[in-house]
Image (cartoon, rainbow, N blue to C red; front, side, top):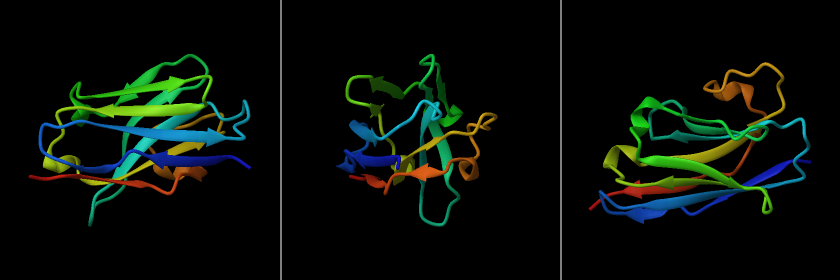
Length: 125
């Protein structure tokens, strides 16, 4: 059974950086993408960034504005989200997710069937 475990969240001042990790276990070849979503209190879950497990293509939400970088370590089956120049508006619970859907709308959270437990990111002075 595929499992995802996030880590790396915390409290950081505006302008600071954090690196989130998403460790995947028992991932089969059917799972072709890992993505990061976030959900702030009272808001809908939104896509942040995605990486293809087949060709390493990367995708970012417009609001990222060049501040975040998604990457992966093939040997550790881990995907990272490096977040720089953090703003209070980035405060949210961050989740990683994966899907084995052949035709997948990357940005639609309901199309992902495996989720991690989430990690809190708080940006505040």
